[in-house]
Image (cartoon, rainbow, N blue to C red; front, side, top):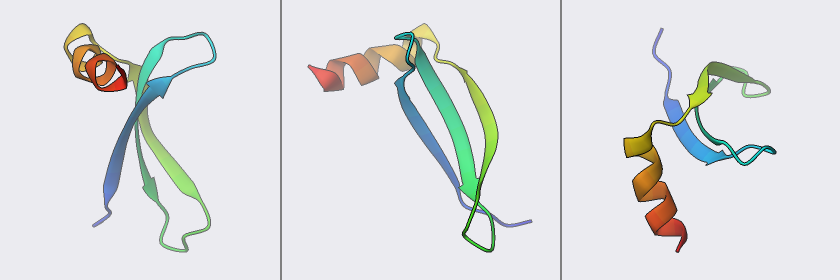
Length: 52
């Protein structure tokens, strides 16, 4: 299946940095979550530097 995947990073309600990978279903009316996990240290650094 060919689908475009998107990676987003952000803070949860508990101030944890998360990485979420998702795609849109063919119909476009729903989102499929592929992966959601806590961001690693190396991933957090560029995100936090960009927020300054």
